[in-house]
Amino acid sequence: MPSDYFERFDAGEVLAASRLMSVVERGGDEAEAVLNALFPRVGRAYRIGVTGLTGCGKSTLVNALTQCYRRRDLTVGVVAEDPTSPFSGGAVLGDRVRMLDAGGDEGVFIRSIASRGSEIGFSERATELSDVLDAFGRDVIFLETIGVGQLEHKIRFSAHTTVVVLTPDAGDEIQGLKAGLMEIGDVFVVNKSDRPNASRFADELRSILELRTSGTWLAPVVATVATEDTGTDELIDAVERHRAHLGEEGRMENKRAASLRNRVVAIAEEKLKELVWQNGRIQESLQAACELVVAGERSPYEAAREILKALRAELGSGGAGAAETSSEKDSK
Amino acid sequence: MKRPIKVLVAKPGLDGHDRGAKVVANALRDAGMEVIYTGLHQTPEMIVEAAVQEDTDVIALSVLSGAHMTLFERVRLLMDGQGLGDVPLIGGGIIPEADVVKLKENGVSEIFGPGTDTRDIIKYIRTLFKTDGSQEKAG
Image 1 (cartoon, rainbow over the protein chains, first blue to last red):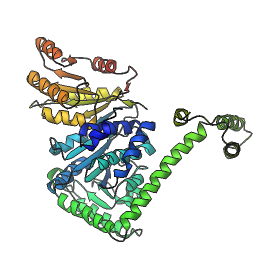
Image 2: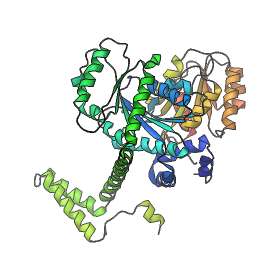
Image 3: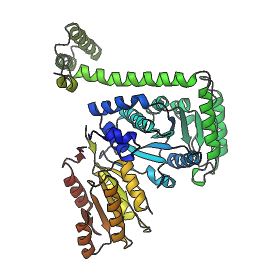
Image 4: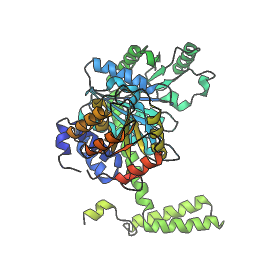
């Protein structure tokens, strides 16, 4: 990695920021080094998560919101996710097509990423890329993700305000919506609200949200027709009201603390898993335990306990069977 | 950890026919690449801006309008001026053989004419980087 990337990044050079984002995307020790160096400068940007199924109009909405913020003279960053094909591992990242208003505007930085099949990994990567944009000085950052289930709850730790985008497709009942989606939204949008039953759908959504008992914020439901830029002013107002709500009674600080804690736990868990499974003694124990299970002499639970016994023995002995990590190799 | 090859597929200028570009985009996806598809009516400036923000490994232009000489030259110039001098520029569309020769003498790595098998494009892009379909950048 060229040594002057950080200097050029500090000077506001987009290519340097983009290349650092690529280093971060590749993961590993280099990515950590970049994120460590940038961490002191992370925390200024306001992050808005936008989630919803493919085709709900997320990108079109993000485009409209971006233009609103640009009119207020704020700079914007967008991290936009599209699904990786489970068959080929490739992806077509087409969110930029919906954001043509941003073309030629230096105040909008759009970075597209593919989900790459990794469920835990994705949200972390999107958060890391938004960290780079944050350190780069963007005032508002949109994290656009495909809402496919397990990932949704993670976005609430990466964003200050989470916007859930729904559409009143024919035949859909509110009851069919995943409970998780209902829990994480700070603002709900019924897009394509020019469709029939849109207002009934919105009303049903409001009644359900009124029953939500956790938290002090009643999530509003905003009706939009993103392609006609209808309802986007109301949407921005709703987001800004949530932002003001967070500004009271230390909620922002609590949210930040919870978010950072969540990240530390997630990263530590990944490293712990690696440490455990790469240990030679643990591997041996795993192999032996599995053979016993296959032979019918142990249940999977008994086998797992035996592996844990081996782990405790390893910890007691100071990790004699540990695999060397690359950073340990470097320090020798 | 390597990442898949990232290709920017763009249609500069007034040309409104994007079926070819979409066919190529989908073929590259099916070959395991990540494609940034920018859509129609892109100016050379917008195309290069996108390539910079996305840090793409290759830029592929589709030009059916006949304005290829100007468009390819402008994109190449902007790429060179914005730190993307090492990034290959390839393209396709309706481009006469004599112009293909000129383009290749002026910083365009390869041109794929109508009827090209997408497998040839995939093979070519892979030879620009590592042959296993992923790319490790030096910088």
